[in-house]
Image (tube, rainbow, N blue to C red; front, side, top):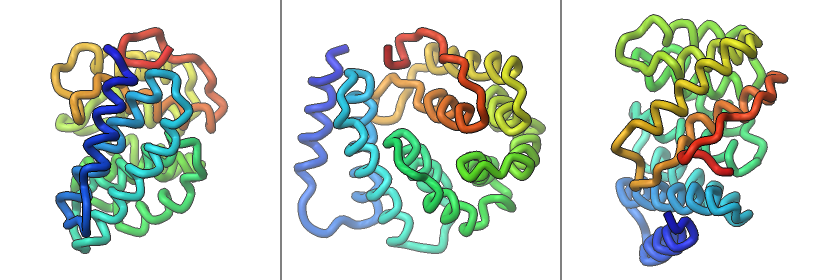
Length: 209
């Protein structure tokens, strides 16, 4: 794939949006910015950080536009984007927990909580939430295991889990905004490094070189 051309197309689409945006338009705008950021990351372009930040801002705005609700994908997106932008994600993580994600009935809500707790280095709480996700049939088991093994500081088990996550991205057909990038694995890698686990991700067509 020509990643720079793909990124240019997404950035042009982002720029076409004018005037005050409603909730749905803000979500679409965040999706477009995130797609541009992932493409720039794959191309090795430092401008990716700026576009991850834009995605986080738009998704946060979309949540604030119609609270309260349980569109948990948005705080997840905000957290992922802040982490991938190389920013301090503490504020986004605290906000995510303030939404009640730790006690959410939805697995996606608790996934948001696990990411937030890991970002804040609250390892025991993160492990508790991640373990609850491992018990579910309707949540990706390898993602839940990777979260739990990061929290437990189990490098060997984590490596096996994150390699499975990468493999799942390699075999899937659908991606957000048609961007074939294993962003979940990239975020897990960043969180693992905070825990002192620095094993490189495997080489893959869905990861940057």
